[in-house]
Amino acid sequence: MTGFEGANFAIELLNVTLLGILFIVAIAIARLRSLFAIVMLSGIYSLISATWFVALDAVDVAFTEAAVGAGISTALFLAAMVLTSRTAKAEKGAMKILPLLVVVATGAVLIYATIDLPGFGDAMSAANTGVGMEYIERSKTEIAIPNVVTSVLGSYRGFDTLGEVAVVFSAGLAVVLLLGFGERSLGATVRREDRAEPKTKEGEGE
Amino acid sequence: MNGDHHVILRVVAKALIPIISVFGFFVHFHGEYSPGGGFQAGVILAVAIILYSLIFGIAPCMRAITPGFARTVAAFGLFLYAAVGFWALAMGGNFLYYDALFREAPGGHLGQHVGIIVIELGVLAAVAGSMVAIYYAFAGRVSEIRDEDW
Image (cartoon, rainbow over all chains, first blue to last red; front, side, top):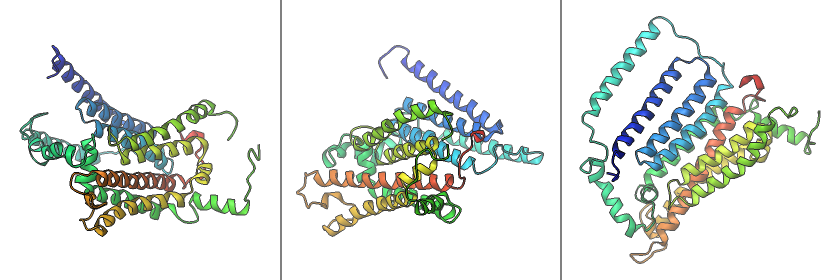
């Protein structure tokens, strides 16, 4: 595909290596009890998935994964973590067997489903023959911007994106309504302090 | 700020935060030519703000960007996006039909470009505002993050 001898083998090797690292990180996350380490490892997991998405030529997805998965969710998990205890409780007895069975069954179903998936880069797959090709062909004359992903997200699928923005906004609104207002929130405290003492001096109380 | 406990962290962050913010705007305004767009840019800008509050304390951060401001920005972003849709409606097109924005002749692309830029601005504002608001809601519950918590 790339014109180099052995390039495909190198790409295969890269995919296997990245997926292997992902597997190891996932096992480590499942076995660890320290929440801080788990949060850090899930950030690493996102970063490695982003690298893998780049290897699969899905640059936009990789960028989003790196920004959202490794960036903002890690920061939000850290902020949530300091509100609770630092270690997870160890499960015992039947609680260990049942989830394992569920996970194995789900994994088996998913692997069975992959048999029907089209091969990677298959020109005859549903994603490459339907409306996607239409967008790629018409975007240049209808929208006239180079990045087809932006023209699909912003223009052809603008209504979907409006829904997504509404989802993000409602998620933020729900969290703020549950946690953010009221006397106990720091925002209220800061506002109250500012009102009581409009000019706070730097380095006071050192 | 007790002494020079996290001095390296602070010096590095002081240099990094402006670069992260500029990169966020680059991702936003370059979204038509390269990977990225309003969503990723909003997240990156929110990360810059959150990084500031993690390192320099959340109270100064809340004074600079108040929680109310973050919530307002988030609501404004969604409003801006929907407003483009209604603008197209008012000009006689369908909802979010950018070609109708300026009543161009067929073949003109001004409406598409303006429409995409404005809705991306809306996405940027909604995502950045929501993320900062969510972070404030979580982080605002504890007064100060102690060193042993890390």
